Length: 172
Image (cartoon, rainbow, N blue to C red; front, side, top):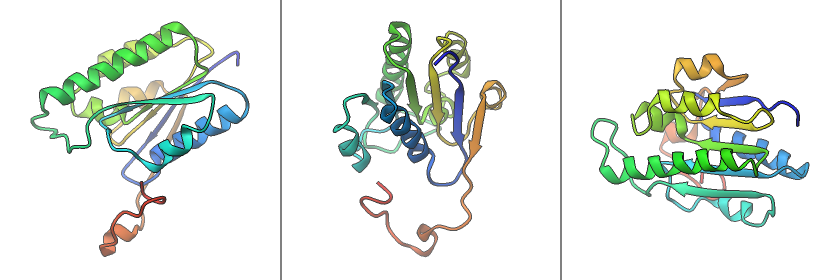
């Protein structure tokens, strides 16, 4: 690719990570190399089992399978987010990947685990041909402004509202 774009998947609805993985799957199918960095996630999700079977779609998790408090995040959550962010910088500098997905980066910024200024600097240093995908609720308005593609997922109706628990293979 000559020009890589910046994508943002945000909003209160379901499907932000799924959309990013779908885009990554399309890229991998076209022979591009994809890496997804998950912030604030440590649980083994079903989609990760599928991704492990692909040669050119890799991932890393930088979070715990614990709720992160926005008001008082624990030091380990801050440290893991910074570790994920350093991983993103390193991967960008190596120029090994055609697409990098920063899953839940918007939440990490909103929770102040990573500063919006640091994320903006990372975006500014993005290699010209890298496709960069940022997911998570609460996308910062400055990130939305500088992105090339922005999609907001809205929750109109969901079985959760009727007390249906998350279903393996569908919701996780």
